Image (spheres, rainbow, N blue to C red):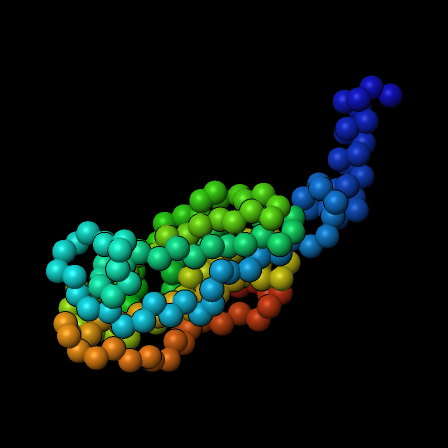
Length: 174
């Protein structure tokens, strides 16, 4: 049998066995680098440019890593959900790469930019993927801006949405 024909037979056999990644089988798994993501209370910076040297002022950029424990992760959709006022304070970029390979991470950049005291802003990052453990991954993200010089405190971080492990909810992303 020629090697190309053998390759087709092997790939077809893997597909029949339910191997999603073609590299040894097993479930595709995803884990966030942090959940919930408590960005905390911050003070206004007074500019529109993030300062990567501080976690105390906004705008603030933060990276959420999507860790793949096994298999090739295929991200279908990523979005933010929450109340309109809270959503207006956040921006989302990524994931990069869109299809991370086995044991590789994908990065989502989240920017929080409330310029005046307000909040707390509780949202959730929703990741729809082929992951068996969390086909709909929900990562709560919370932050708040307080007046310059005001004492910062720890506050509760709640998610506006929840989805049970192993379940998928395609209605969450608009």
